[in-house]
Length: 255
Image 1 (cartoon, helix red, strand yellow):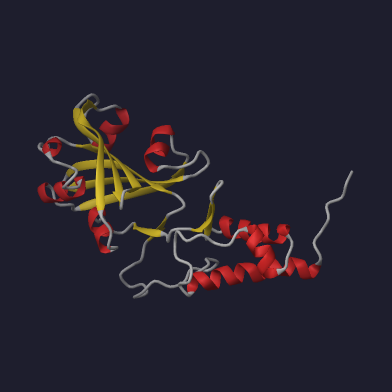
Image 2 (cartoon, rainbow, N blue to C red):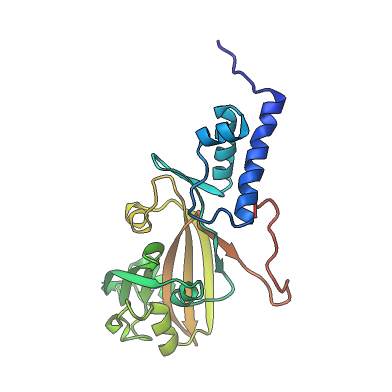
């Protein structure tokens, strides 16, 4: 059996130097999200290392979420993580606008349906009750960032399906007709089905962050929704009112 050849100690340390250089260029703004980084061949020439060492540096940065690779195109700086605040509910269009970008919405489905056992239980209605259902893909500068599948109690928001969701989000409409007095969030990492994967433009092995949300207005459950986010682009955060006044660096996360 052929034994694997281990790199020399000095060679092994060079991959750390390559990583530190790339991270420094990102921190200094020389490399922005979406920018292409040097290829393995370019790193070999620049640092005088083996291809194996250059490959290791790039692979580790990809594993850490700093870089992403597009087959046949190159390796690029990953987009910055976007935060999902679990302690409040915000209009996704407002969040996108605050980042200086444009919000677009693609309405995939919008209509009436009979509540199955799960939907009836979530909305606290009887099995088979008529509910409103919508499936919307939210985009930021034409890039999909959230798939929203929502079920609405028609007794609370009877005009829901009359809304033009391309100009007004479901959240915006619902909070006007039924102000939120309570809500719950349940978060899971899931493997998306084919449809969700297609809407978010994900590859087969990419995970999703799924938030299950229910909201109340008074004693009535207004809506329940499944919100799907690309797992590599989003992170969850929650901070108490007596917590730190500003975000801080996360232990183990490359800045």
